[in-house]
Image 1 (spheres, rainbow, N blue to C red):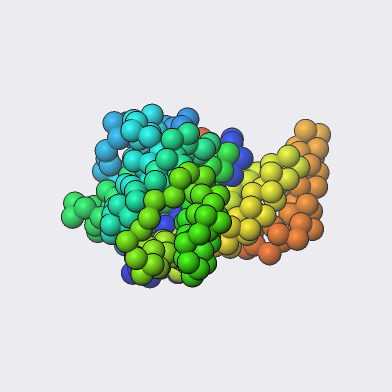
Image 2 (image 1 turned 120 degrees about the horizontal axis):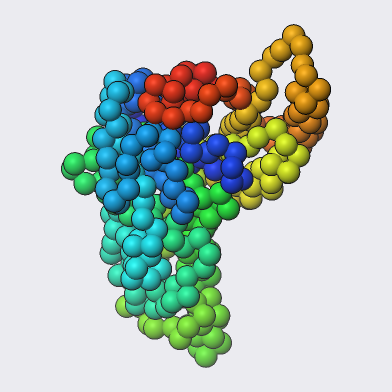
Length: 326
């Protein structure tokens, strides 16, 4: 696996029960043993990262993991505490973590935070990730060059990635309205964009600056050199079908997606029992779906063998990482 010095984010996602946590943990161990200070974070409400490392990672603070060559920390983010204070607080955390706190203050003039009074599904994960991103800017944790997220199985992380696009689109519409003299129709147009009563900004230039900041946030999440979403699936028809839908959603959001990890593949065998032969046939059917799907077939396919022992602890994760992450 090619490594560079620039900080990179990896989001590991897919259907529940496909082994995302083991894949995320093994990737983090691989990075650390390759010389990269790494942190792996679980934003899945049903955490299993502690089980994967055989170490208590609860409490909401990064915990050092022993037995790797470079610093490796792990964290199970407490989603319930992360969402206390509402969705607007989470968005402010996100903007602050990227040095765009002034942008949120300007959004206050537009009453943007009122849009988040009833947070949409997935906002808990957005807030959790935004807090982690702010944490990574602190001097104590600024050394991390690889950040791995074990995401929720329902794909709510897409909410985080689509938020900057929503803001960019809304502010872009307002920019067009600002080109005209304020009239009742213009005010109504702005109200339709925000869903609330519009409040005057000082100058059109201020709005243009705000729009520019929003586009920077959007570009960060769409930067193929900084972020990659890795889809994990297993060789069953149901799992592959859901992965295809997830892949289409990621493509629609322009989220960099280049790899599909096919987990729990039966290893080669010279002789199969009746059960194994049926399972192998089932897996081949699923693999054919991957090959024939217009979206999944464009991804680099990683085969991860079904191991004969449970993957728990750093030595097992190191073995898994060396087996699948080339």
